[in-house]
Image (tube, rainbow, N blue to C red; front, top):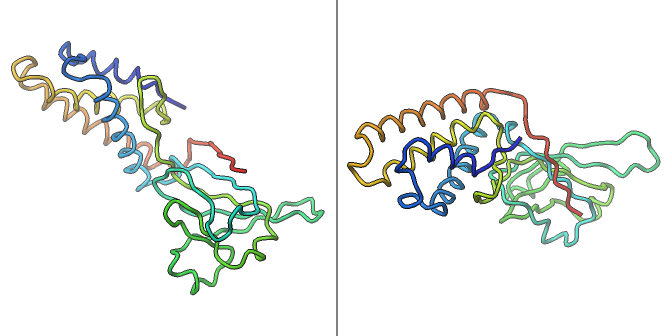
Length: 218
């Protein structure tokens, strides 16, 4: 599921003839849309992390055990699992991978475990303890890439209304006074607030994850 950023901007510009490039240049709107998409995803995941959860699969061994493994840009990592080496078994064995703070690694009595530190996954324990595993997977909510008119916004189709409402609301105050009706700014703010409420209620209350992306790192 994805929405064309160009479609969002085109629909928002149709709200008023004054929502043109003179008062709202494309780069300015792109910057707003990038920040807004990240913010609305963050608000949804506070209620339902599964809505935008993806998996990061990393094949072991670690390139540098002490340094850890670099992670993609993200809102938050939640947990994960490790896959044991098969050793001839036809059944894959998975164990839960706990994420704790780096300062608590000595006191943590759970293994396997690790920490997210400055953009890296830092494994706990000794390197030889991880030799029994062939890979690990982390579950996280990614930080959306910067939005341009040529890009797609990775959100469910139902997000189109709230994105258009937000962009139109952003554009309105940037138009000089006297060009648009005085009530336009107020009406657009109300439309945005209602669109956000409905979208967060729909996506934030669903326990089904719509995203099935998997990122592989080797």
